[in-house]
Length: 117
Image (tube, rainbow, N blue to C red):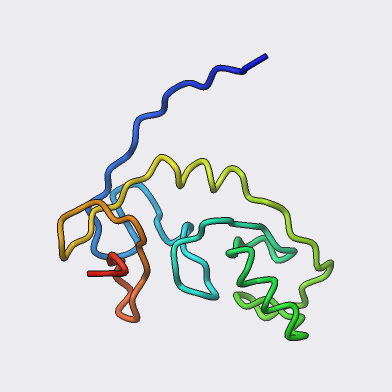
């Protein structure tokens, strides 16, 4: 049995910062690594993080939210499938190359760029 999936159009965003029209791109960026998430998880603080980054954060014995500084209790991570699905439907155009970004990151100036640009 295979469940059919509706084809969702890709939303192309020409963006120089973390906002692209009505799409809030900052939600796709890990607050720890400041890079586009590939495997987002939700922590007890309600924020999403790249799974590897938050696991390393917790392994260091850090027990407070990187975003709110409140205690991270319990230390359970839940896959953020909704965010992952939304990310699959976004294609961001690099402001430098004008090409769709394959590996976007947020620079210290707050703008999103292709990692290799």
